[in-house]
Image (cartoon, rainbow, N blue to C red; front, side, top):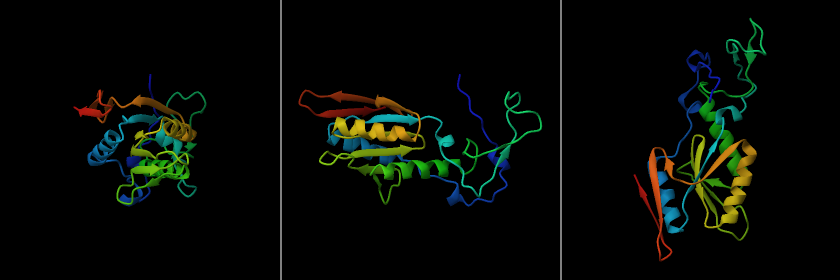
Length: 193
């Protein structure tokens, strides 16, 4: 069973601007760009999912939220409230806070984001080895490097942000099916359905 504690963001009393609540996400064009780069480098894309992503980001100290615990919570008596210290699903700023945390984490790993596409990252993790390319869509990421050692290093470093499910070669992403074909001449192709 999967469950989440969700906050009613529509009851948020803060007056947020659109810029302070929205987070960028990778577009279809950027997905196709990364797919093309992967084909060029003869490396299939890999994907990962960061578990409970929004809960990973802390709320700034000046933002206070109090919520009633779920009905029947064994740890909270009646008439009690929780003061949130972490972002929860449903908060208006949760997507923005999560993207800022993930982006900072990727940059601390040595990756840089594209000036025109903030969801695309590239960087050299191991000196003398090829770079890793990363695309971010909320809590799902796709990535590849021509070096398996770089991919392993990326996985190791990304895992320090929280629980990450590395799913290997992309077979489905955004409802798109990826059928990878390793050709006899060493080339790689993919069919997107």
